[in-house]
Length: 284
Length: 110
Image (cartoon, rainbow over all chains, first blue to last red):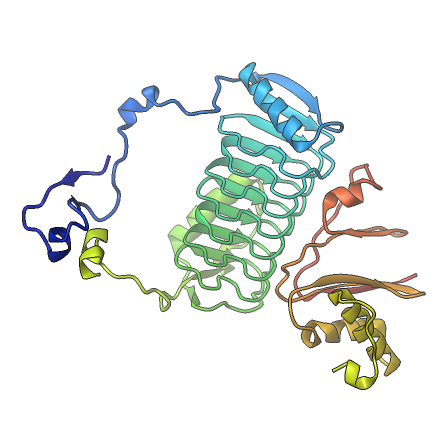
């Protein structure tokens, strides 16, 4: 829990009863001790065996039935699940909070594998809009193309599309890595806050528009820079890191990384202050 | 503006505006593709549309790319839908589909 202590030297706001405690520490508060992790129950997780494999044909199931079936199979210990005939259905594979090998033999519709935390997913087809939205951890590999809002608000993990992606890739990204083997559309990295995006091909207009932080690497041509997105020099650590990531992504083996363009936030739109929440209340 | 030129609208649907806009362009000598490219800057708001005439088929996506379109092309077939599942209902076998990019216009002759 956050370290809470009382403060006898009350501000005017405290005297008025607006608040009675002071939060110490700027950031990086420890909310639970890792040693206590075994006591921490994570809803929707199971002990699975990756060698225990099963095929699941979802041709006659709707997305709720299919996702429930995936959950049931995980509860039975299956660690490798192969989904047959997804046929572009929406919201398949969402909310998987487990270590799991999940393989889709076909294409997914909107919101595929959203809000996942941990699984390794391979999609042998295309994905629609908002694939892996809110992904927390894990690895997702898409063999073909992806729609718009690819990796919206991802917080962690590796999200990889070997083909091209639509507009607003990595919108509101908060962490993790998005890797695209082909081209990306307009507004890539729109309002991203943390994390990294690697595009090996060309990108459309307004790249990194209103980005707060994070980094975008582009291998091809850039349509135009968005508001407050600026170019930054590539460093050796950038090149080394991208090389490692592309190896994980199984793409771009012979790609000339040192010629990529690095894009970061110009920080001219930043309007932050150094006040703690309590100080802000005091200022009010 | 189009009404000032004598056009009349039969519905409140904004899609009708696109049809009338393109018809007016083509009446003045533009090809379908030229009219569609003009529509990217001539029409306000976000849109993705496809249009068919007696001998051609076309699609256009505005520069904001806020409306979805999934496209499949082969030598003898073009299929479009706002979602993959619509195309899969007629082509259930494995195919390569993609999202056209922002500001993209395509026209096929029938």
